[in-house]
Structure formats: C-alpha cells, structure tokens
Image 1 (cartoon, rainbow, N blue to C red):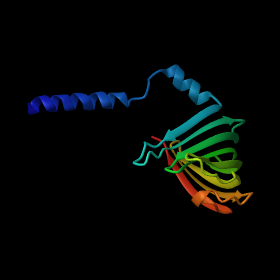
Image 2: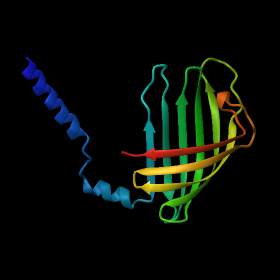
Image 3: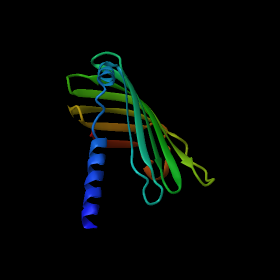
Image 4: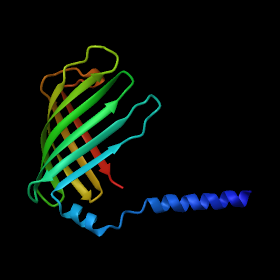
Length: 167
C-alpha cells in the first residue's frame, strides 16, 4: 500500500511540475514581446473572512521611453469593498529608471446599506527602477485633493514604497 501511495505521489508531482512549463508556441511569444500593448494582473486567494485583493494593469508603449497605463485595484473586506482606478504616465529617463505621474480615484463600496465616504481623488508622483525583467521597485507620493476620509485610510498625503516580483 505504501508503494502505491509513493507511485501516485510521484505521478502527481510530475503532472503538476509539467503543468508549470511555459507554452512553447513561438508565434504567441514573439507577438507579445514585439507588441506595444501589454497587460498584467494578480489576485490573492480568498482569506478567512472572504477577503480578496486583486489588481490588473493595461498599458501601451507610445515610444521607447514613454508609456501610459490604466490600473485597477479591487479589495474586499468584511464591511466594505475598496476600488481604486488610476491612469499613470511613465517616462523612462534611462534603460531602467523612470518617473511616474498620474491621477487616481479611490472609492468605498458598501455591502450593508451604510453611507459611504466620498471618493478620494489623488495625484500620484514618483519614480521607479526596473531591476530586471521580473523585479521592479517604486516610490510614490499620493496627494489627496478632496481630503475625504475613506475608512481607516483617509489621509491627506501618503508616501509608499512598493516592489513587484513576477514569477
């Protein structure tokens, strides 16, 4: 019985490992690498309180050093949901260093019939560095225009440091 369990375990490991290999369709790979249009996104799994955190980006390279990007964040919590939509402009000053400017709107979506706060309108300025193809770091300053207190996150100004690792 133990031998059968080991064989099944090895078989499942091989199947799962094989499922992680990238698609070898060359036409698809070449067309995505040469296209000026790109998409990106992620979602965390559902947590204990049915919280979900997700983000996606849609971007377009206008030239080698300038691109425009539309981002959407959607986070669910126990009492409310938060959605943030932003449009950002990236200007590369070198191969890896870039400046970011943009506008965003963040709003609270109620689940239980309570009054929600007014949406926040935010101006974003910052800079980022692409360490390599799969790692980036970014520092942003968010300035809130209308000083709306959005739940626990209501603040007139926010300095954020973020990084992203793609694998």
